[in-house]
Length: 402
Image (cartoon, rainbow, N blue to C red; front, side):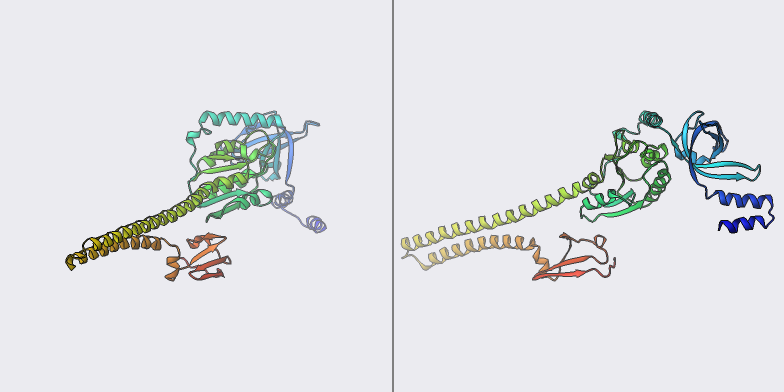
């Protein structure tokens, strides 16, 4: 390829414009990160910033430009003497033949400068009330639609998915860079996409690291984007020493993906436990009713029986009508208590989960959890179906929503 290019260039005559286009095509392959000292900072009316990068060792100079959008996203204010790492590609400007380094991202050099920028932005956001608790939104009591922004590689997403409960959650994930300044654009794009998904909550996650590796999460543009997000945000960002500013601005801050999963599980687990308690309470309640009614019926029958025998011994010579009166009294008392017993039995029967099974209904379960809606199943799931006289194992082949 290189020899072909050399032959092509040697054996053809080009216009100036065509030759510069060829050179820029080659220069596009020279993307690099360059460290140097900032100088000659000038900002155009359109917001683009022109500056130079100087090598401290031999004073070599490279002309640079960063366009307005990229400059605003980087969150760093360029000034003379600041040492930075600029990422970009070289480019020849056709109108004057000058080569410039077109910068895409800027990073500060040195832990001291990073800490200085961190503290400066933290104070600015604190003064605006961005970190105030009264500004933050509550996480929904029973969240279902959950958005996840993190890198799909590594242990973070696996830890989260391993700990999230089976409560019918609808999880949507966007893979994003989460390391260094280059991650800002990925994160902004992911957040804007998630804003259109009608979520109950958004979780932004990554593992721990140094202040340098967390540059993206200490970015003002990104922080202002999350506080405008239509749903509450959980920041599950591990850290070494300084808490990421995005975590401080989020509606809820936890330090690990496992903690985020447990937070989302919490109310569902409490509700499940409460439901189990209520089921036990109802069964005990109706069982006690039956016991009391049976006891009352037996006591009444015994009393009436004694009364009957006493009446016969005392009044055996009286008219037959008296005996009939006593027998009617026994029958009425017996029927009264029989009705109360029947009522108790009907209440229990109506609340028996197996009643519906005998009517032809069935109970589907996936992973020991009852399936109440097709939203909680997907094609290929193994589904256990309980009937009145047994269980069957089935596989979901087709889902039709009504």
